[in-house]
Image (cartoon, rainbow over all chains, first blue to last red; front, side):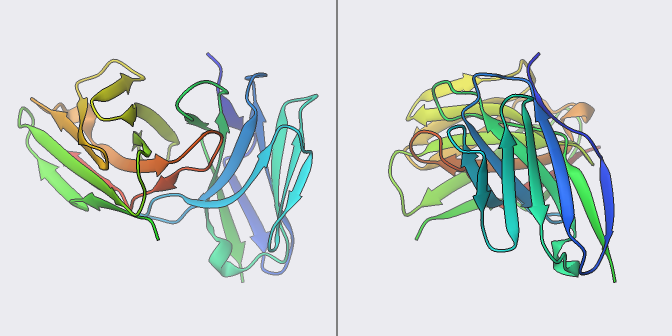
Length: 113
Length: 112
């Protein structure tokens, strides 16, 4: 079936370096994408979103890139901090009624001091 | 501001016992409501979603059911729990189309 998947299950980076988390999606009808951050034992928190009519969106220390040609989504975190350690999920809206989000399997980001 | 409440935070239940998890949203009207399940170290699986009172759609066949008796109340239930029902259950809400969903803090259910 159609799904959102991730390339790397675990990413380890040095504090202060930039992090890049990747996501592949297969539903060409998806028109809205979100990155969530989930800390241990908590619910996912919204980080940043992007619509299909855009290819880049920036937030505070984070940038999301969307490549619709190859159905690829990435999250870039600048100057990664220990507090960024968490599991990151990409999610897509399948473009149908009810605003349903389909989530990928997640990438664990570990920040080394 | 909008808030979402989900309880209990943790729950240990024997196999064959019933289940009732409750989720309420404050500060918004006519939200879309969702129940997700997350197995340990895995992604989120959508179980149920609701666009209005009494309107429930199920994404996967399973041992669970959902109900929405009030606009901002969403309940996840089971008549008889299975070991495979163990997991982290998350309630979420959203408003409108192509908007982010906001999650509760989750309920960790362990069926023993």
